[in-house]
Image (cartoon, rainbow, N blue to C red; front, side):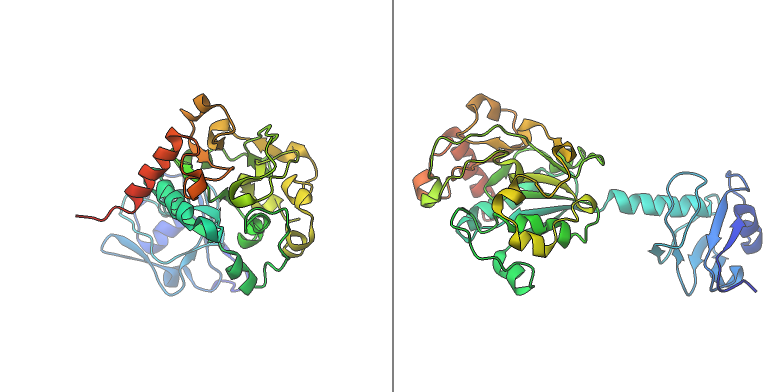
Length: 330
């Protein structure tokens, strides 16, 4: 009997000999970990050339040939054939799951910009080569969950001005996530942005040098000028390195503390993204929009009556995207 308190480590050769599975091309020294609660025969059986797991499934976390399989992840059934080793099966399964994991995208939603939000979501989906997990950040929902309770600041122009910084908490301070304002339009594959993640950074963003000349923007909202203006409108967040962003901090910190990233140990933790991933419409040179992957109507977009032509040809592009998103199928 196996010691039920400790995992037993067997070589692949021992597993194959004990279950009648043919040897693979792997070295017999490649270790395979079996759970501590069942014997080898209870754990594995070979039937009709397929390896099935009985009772409790194999749990694993392994990447690359010859690495150990440790009890951390559950897989209910691993397909096999007589020429494929157990290690290869588990590694392939985990690799496939990791590669197919949806990209988490959080979108700040203002109730006055619902049209913009829906067009942005459609543009993201239409251009993405990878599955997306899109979560709109709706203030009343965050309030109902007890995550957001701060009073509206007279200087905040949108409902999500501060709630965006709850994303690491919503992610359980694990993995990466994308945040973006709703007043954007995707032209490029968001998976290309996702591929730019750098583990040395806590946050990555387009580092504009935007000093607004105007004092008022859309719908009469106050235009605030501060260093790092618009940096937080599109962020790649390394959530495990953003643990300072607790709900208490997000609800009590000043706007400048949040948007100027004072919650980080230093600016060396802020990575720079290519400018095309946050082109400021009617702020930056029009020529720079030609190759931009993400357009941003920071001064107000064509979904507002008084900004119908904001960006001129870019406004027409937004309307075309809207029509495409809401076209009825004939």
